[in-house]
Amino acid sequence: MFMEIAIGAIGIGVVLMVGYLVIAQVRAALPSSADGNVTAGMTSTQATVFAGFALIAVGIIVLAAFGLISVFK
Image (cartoon, rainbow, N blue to C red; front, side, top):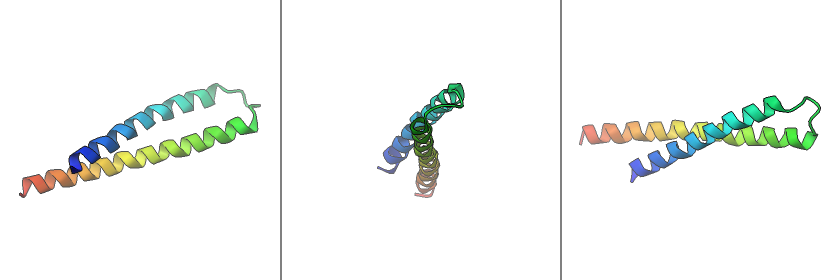
């Protein structure tokens, strides 16, 4: 069960990392005079993507713990 949770967390994290790359490219392509709502939306989207990075870290930690449990079982 732990392995499925970890793989799911890593999968979600990878999708969010790709989203981060897309958002970063769009933000760089926007003119500096973009609407304030657009800028606020991009900022909140990037905050969500940073949460995805945390999911990757949690997934790796859980996978490492699962591996250690399996080795010493």
